[in-house]
Length: 286
Image (cartoon, rainbow, N blue to C red; front, side, top):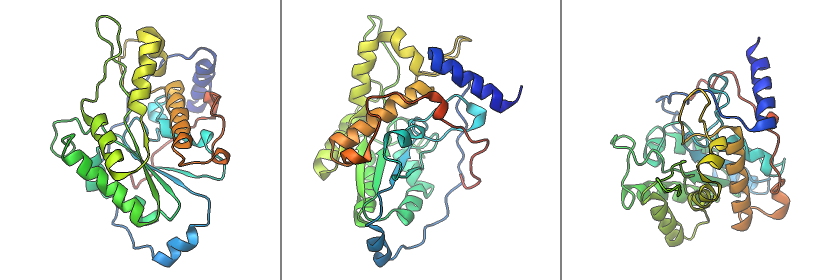
């Protein structure tokens, strides 16, 4: 059976029963992005009249996934289905990245080279900022907000609108069946930064924690890469989970006034999982 046929069959099963995922996350690469060229101010001003584009800086929970890890799905893959067709979503999120390492590899510079006045920059980090690796980890109250400010400042300097998104909560429950917060002080630090800087915040951490509490251990399992074969991945999403978060993000952008009513769609729908696609190979530049 061909790989494309296998994917179609599994997607049909997902649509029918919301099954659990089968494969592991792709390993991150460390190839730096080339330094950006300067975009003239006059060019950015002329571009401001065009439809806004949405740039996404984030980690593996949001990133584009490829055929080898199907059906693992980043929520950024679902966002285009919840915004107007004229709004392009440019997903720069990468597996394993933190607010710090994304900058160190030149990935923020690549976004700032292309972003224009009127565009939106979504910034979602926290999962990997918790790591002990000094090349990746940050402190929630010092280096984490310091790095996030570089995203905010870079976007605003170019006339784009930055939006902070707290990271989706992992699927974790205590012995009594209560959903447990897993990101420490990072969501609090991001909330404080958003308030101090006057930028919109979509609090995905708070929303997912409340939803996981409502659904419980059994009800949440269908959104994560937990399998009948015994794999336990309570961080990454399958397609229904990514779809759920993508819609949550779109609703948050509307509620925050970042997008208008005519710039979002399907906010009360779950789009078919068959609409999602997994390219065969990642671009060479990543």
